[in-house]
Amino acid sequence: MIFFYTPYSCSMAAHLALEQTGVDYEARLIDFTQNEQRSEAYLAINPKGRVPALQTEWGILTETPAILAFISQRFPEAKLAPIEDPFRFAKVQEFNSYLCSTVHVAHAHRLRGSRWADDPKAIESMQQKVAQNMTECFTLIEQQLLTGPYVMGADYSICDMYLFTICQWLERDGVDIRRFPKVEQLCQQMLENPVVARITALYQPAS
Image (cartoon, rainbow, N blue to C red; front, side, top):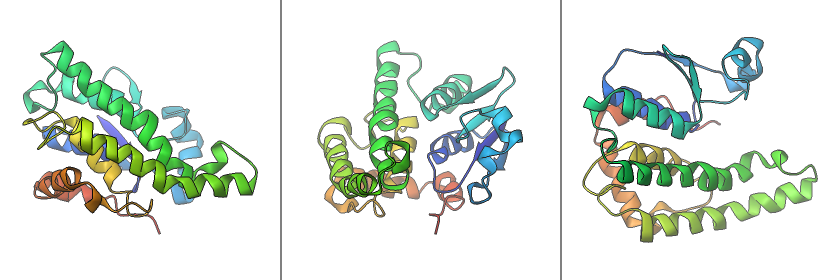
């Protein structure tokens, strides 16, 4: 397998999952500072021009929730999700879909306002809402969605890897993680995992 990633991005979640399985794979850096994501070579892999992308023996997968689900099902021995229980696996998908469709989008308004508006004042207004929107998202996660100590209770899963990834953006989004003690504790626990520490080092924030 070949995994395509870039620092300070959601690709960290799937990167953590791959590394946690212990399987052999190749990680290829896509340099956004050089606009490599728009290169002809990469667009042939992922026409969306984004990361992550995972080249498998069956074809290429994109979108974090899909890649996470694939990894957990392809390598069941790693026990990254309750794939044997249809309802609990659907709950995993429910949580990860919320991170993808709502939380990530709330964050993206700070850096990618031009996706939604051309007016500089409109973009600035969106940027000013990011801290509030991210705080609301994490309040819901803290109070309703994170059962503790992990998202799915006692079992470490791909949900935690995805949540941990988005937590790396909170400070720059103007949100103090200390407002969410269960989320903060989860992140601290994960940082004690050598796999997490190893992959996190590849994803330092962009300047």
